[in-house]
Length: 185
Image 1 (spheres, rainbow, N blue to C red):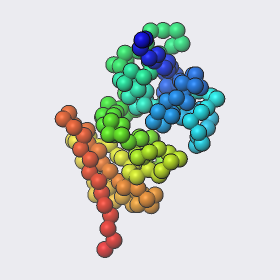
Image 2 (image 1 turned 120 degrees about the vertical axis):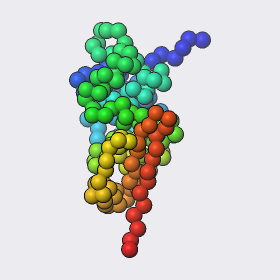
Image 3 (image 1 turned 180 degrees about the horizontal axis):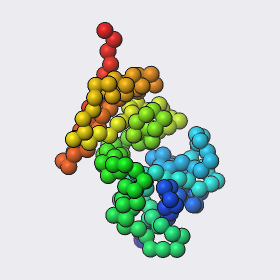
């Protein structure tokens, strides 16, 4: 029996692209990894176009041995360290955010970008289009001070979109999560 073939992906500037539509569809079906180029809200997991992965998704899938990442079309695969260096260039605090992303994925959640909610991640139990995201996650370093106004602002936003606001603090031993509940007086 031969080992399973890894899916090739290519870094192009600040994107990670899976060129083969069948491979991209397979990744999407396995856990909502990536998004087909030019389709805003996919209705099915089968696409006829390339897919784009976030650097978080790409590193996670690389660590799981599911994909292999190249910088140029004809080159050696990139090491995990090289991928992290490129991602750090494009994303502030990438490593800390990735630690939270990986922890949530390993717990069985579907993790998608949370930009439209003003956060780092939106968390689903089953996936977009199947259920609504339950939480929005903001990653905050242990040493970072967060003001009361920032917490209130985030809480109001989360409440307006019917989500629970969560601060995630990555640490060496494990990530800590702080869930805020808003009550009416």
